[in-house]
Length: 330
Image (tube, rainbow, N blue to C red; front, side, top):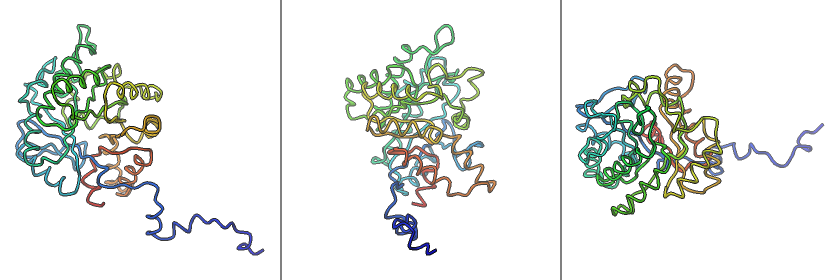
């Protein structure tokens, strides 16, 4: 039998035969504009510190912060997300250091803006870096997170960060109603152009472990979890409800966190709302890939592959600890 005479006219391997052809027909592409680099800064630190559970990621003091930012900018990365490690002596049950206009994070924002005015600075609105108990809000007399009392402090924190020069305010606390409260406060105080990036679908995930070490908050949790305010890992319709509420309340961008275990959520959020949708490749995702690469179980290429999967699912931008590394390749 002459196989060629029976063979179909369509051969999908034709467009896979050369690298140039594969690029021309690529459905999903990854560029440096898709990447946001998270940075850890530590109060009273001179120089830098390794983070044991996050290979190649460090905490920086303000004396080295600009050097790190300069490298990030030189790679073409347009935005950073800054996470503070606050002096333990400044933490209290109410997280009041968060609303101090001259706190460590505000100083860092002003320092970055002075030298890199075009760089987009993203900062979280949540109280966990500032509370002795490590929760994202204030506690009531039963030890539970008080939603409405927390909103008052979160609103003031957002204003402090906007005044310091943050371009994007990112409420990560998952309190009900916080987007509306923050948006109204920003409007009333002439911060109409400050962007709100809502951690709209933030799951109560076990993939956050290395981050807790990085910001030195894990020690405060004890046996308590964040299950009463972060989302249950099995829910997707609830994620759509959360995103819908946050958009209605004034969010400009929404985010899904974590990333790879929740690609289905990224896809459905983007398809349903057509709003700028970010995703966070969280510390546990990063560290497990890095550990497998270090042991030779996976190749370095899996980092880029994982980021392409976010884009393919519908994400417009990715917060990833690999941003610098991937930007060099791109």
